[in-house]
Length: 290
Ligand code: SF4
Image (tube, rainbow, N blue to C red; front, side, top):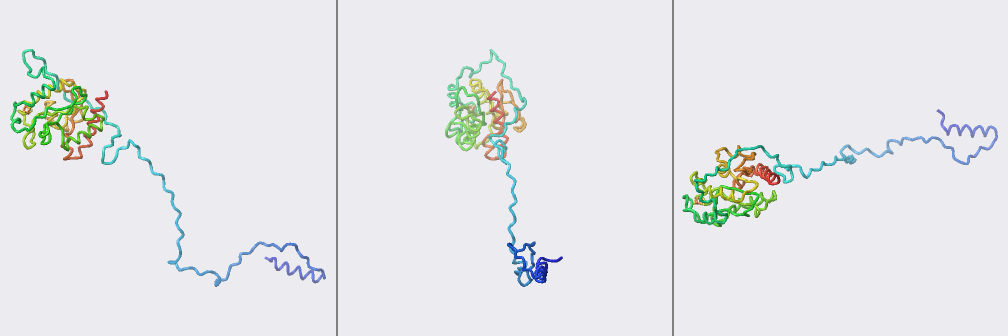
């Protein structure tokens, strides 16, 4: 293909043959620019492979993180805002004793304060011999929730108060978590005197002491009872069933709903039981709200 310079050269030669002056254009002849390839020695040397600079990779857009719901359960820990478990089905029913006009109950007329006086001077079982203080229980006489434990430990025996020390502090936290501050709850034990060496109370000791607890519950008439630990559950429900078999049921103690859960001292030994305890106390909370 003839390029523009060749055409222009022919044109000048033709004009010369015709003795005509060359036509001078106002603008230079434009032709399509030809991309001339520079000679090899004019091109910049290609750097060796290792010296090539890598152009930065474009940043890949990250998908937005899904936000955790405030109600999503936290891994390994019970979330206070997660949905409470459903209220479970019925369990053991302990009927109120039939009234017997001929059986005189020595505690029938006792008030809470009168019971405390009797307990402080009680010698009905061997536990009185080793106690520093009896621990009758404490709380408002019209409490809607009653917590029942096994018996006093060393701190309780020293102070004459139930659930003090580390287990007591944990109980305070549990109660606060279900919006039942300790000062609104009545707290008592199955036996009112400390068994030596923190052993479990024996059957005859429980039998001797239970009338005090029965009378306390009859006077307070709570809306819900929370039995913490196997000893409390067995004594109130008159059963030898295991604690795990008694959990997750709404038992009936003389007409009052009763929930069974772990004792705070057991939770200090085995934190894995905190989760089921959290479920249990939220069931108790729902029963209080009904
Ligand atoms: Fe009395 Fe109960 Fe103490 Fe035994 S444990 S001495 S029955 S108050």
